[in-house]
Image 1 (cartoon, rainbow, N blue to C red):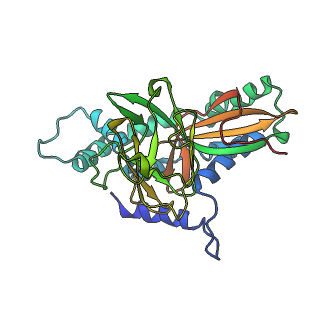
Image 2: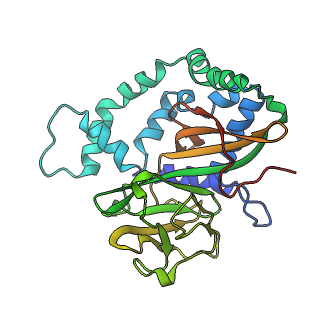
Image 3: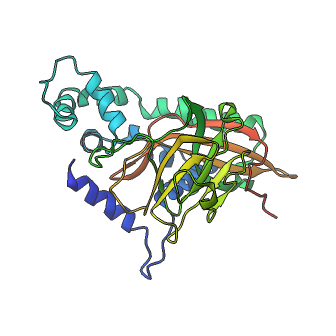
Length: 315
């Protein structure tokens, strides 16, 4: 893949470090705050400028051509109607498919005018919030978290995760996590009686790693993760009661480009009213671009929820 894309993206991330070396907000967290403020201030322009629909032809082509996401590349390759030579690698197939199909993808995006985006995704969230009589100026943002639903299938945990292109990683069960970013793992009904655990050994529950993790190995409720600079770069998720149920976890710094450009679901939890009530918005399939994170699917207002584990209302 093009190294220029990585250089530009790295420069954006490095701008999130202060002159005295202290890390500022993770770009995904900064993105979440910006989107939440766009709702709070009814600022559609700010919302639109963080969407894939705001990319012009040049920026969209650059974004798609250099995306570090195997699933997205394979999806576009599958749409290519001509046969590839048998010896072609994934990268060679991608170059051909991209040249033939990127304009089709652009035309699909271009069909959505700013007014359509406003009417079909921005206004509905404000309207749904108004149904709860939410007064945005009095809301408080409680959390910005990467949502990782966990299920169970074929004797192992299933977690949404994307593979990269240049990593030579054949193990689709690898889970890439960033430091200084909050993750919420939600276990569904299929994981019932299957304890989810993170540790320094792929199968040994006696080596569970609990620093920066709430609910590790509890067997119930959400699992909250926030790793920092002290966290080792390699851990494992597993089920202590069933061998082979998990996989590796690779922990990366936010400015480390040697990782997939993952489709990230960001969960915004905020409070309103007295006594306080909790509400949520999910930002679907956020991807890192040379302009910073952008959302590629329609955000959704999830309505009122019970206060999620690990969060508290402001005093």
